[in-house]
Image 1 (cartoon, rainbow, N blue to C red):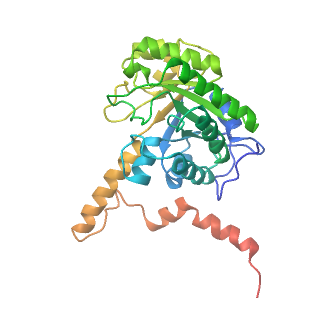
Image 2 (cartoon, helix red, strand yellow):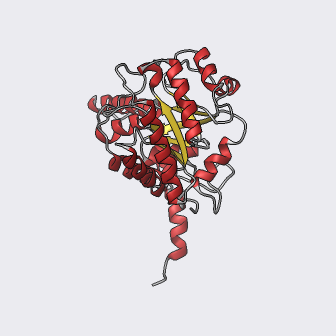
Image 3 (cartoon, rainbow, N blue to C red):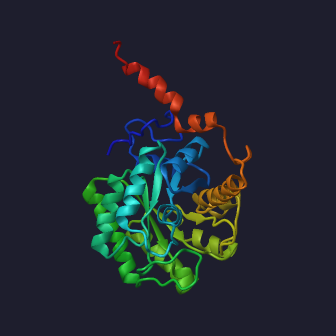
Length: 311
C-alpha cells in the first residue's frame, strides 16, 4: 500500500510518512527507534494538523474525543463504525504523519472486526486499537466495565490479523485489555501476553493504577512495544514524563483529553467574552493571519498560481 497523499500536507521529513512508504511502515519505523514516542489524541482534521505542526511524529484518533466533538455525547458506545471511519479518513487526508485509530471493541463479533480492520486500512490509518470490552463499551478509567471471555478476545485479535493479511496491509494492531478494572491485574497480564502470541503488534492495558503495575505490564512479552495512556486531569494511571515512561519500558504514549479539554475551555471563555459585548482576548484568540497560516492559505495561493491560465 503506497504512502498516503495528504492535501496540503506538511513537507516530507524524517518524522512523517516518507515517499513510497505506507502509513503503517512509517509507524513501525518510528516505534523501532529509542524513546517513548508521544501521540496526542485528535478528533478532527484541524487538530491533526496542529499535532503535526507541533512536531509530534504520531497522531492518535481517540474515540472519547471524537464522540465528544462529533456527537456531543459521552464515550459509552454510541458512536458507530461508519462515523469513526469517516472521521478518520478526513484526519488522515490532512496530515503526513502516521495516525492510529481507536477501533473500540471492533463494533461486533469477529466478522465485524475484520470489516473494521479493512475499513480503517482504507481510511488511511497506520494502526488500529482494539479492546476486549463487551458491547456497549464504556469509557476507560470509569467503573462498571465488563470484558468478553479470554477465548473470544483472542479470537478477535486473530480475526484482525487475518483481515490484515487478506488486505495485503501492514496496519499496526494495538491490542488493549480492560481486564485490569473488570477482573484483575493478573487477568489483564495474561490477556495481553495471549494477544501478543496471536499476532498483536503493540500491547496496552488500560487504567493501570501504579508504577509497579506499569512495570509488571512492560515485563510481559518484552519484545512487543507497550503503550501508555496519560489520562490528563484525574485518571487512575500515574502521570509520568516520556523519559520516565521510557525507563519503565513504554514505547508509545497517548494523551486522550488535552486537545478536546482545552478546546472546550477556550470555547467557553470565548463565548463569555462575546456575550459580554467584546471579543476573545489575544491570549486565547490567534490573529487572523495566524489562523490562515495554520490552514495553509499562503501555500494554497502559491501552488494555485502554477495552474493559472492567462486570459
